[in-house]
Image 1: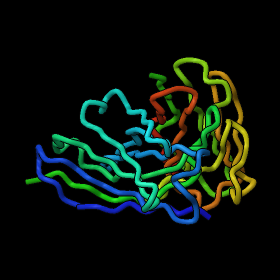
Image 2: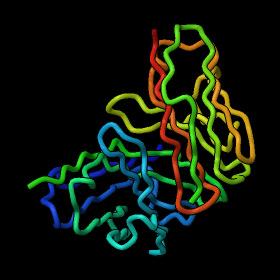
Image 3: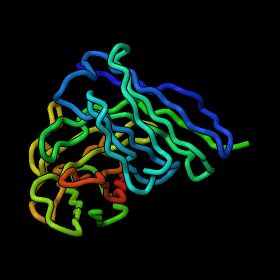
Image 4: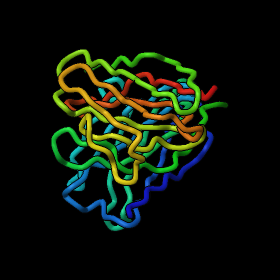
Length: 121
Length: 107
């Protein structure tokens, strides 16, 4: 069964860049069958999709964050990563990685456990 | 962007009662609507995919229905372990969006 695990700093200073990595086990990011997404959840609030990447490097981002987001994939390490620049306190959230099958209208079937990132000086 | 509106925001229910949560989309999304359960300090877990298909391992008391713009998640005979927040999610178009969540509390 596929497992996803987020990792990265839990504290980032305002105006700096948040960087997280999702390591996939039990499956391959090189599979052409899936998109690999980042989703976030501010404390006590709802879920927001950040964007996804395909193994080829093709990406799609939420327009609300597009100017600050970069998602990349490292097939040799079976990982994909998120960079969010110029962070503010509003970017404080639990960040999840998740998998979505490349079929019209597919759900996020597997999620990581999430990692809390706090933006504070 | 497709907006998903859930109702109610909060529901307090006694065990064995039936729970119904609705999700309305701002435009037609066919059956590309999915339901998740999130317990405190856990990641969301997929319950129902494509409006009415149960995900692997999900108890049979959870069911979904609907298409187009109106969808329903039903929990028959609520159990104490079902206390959680439930989210709908659409994957009909980009950006992917979620409902605001419905918190179910056990009385």
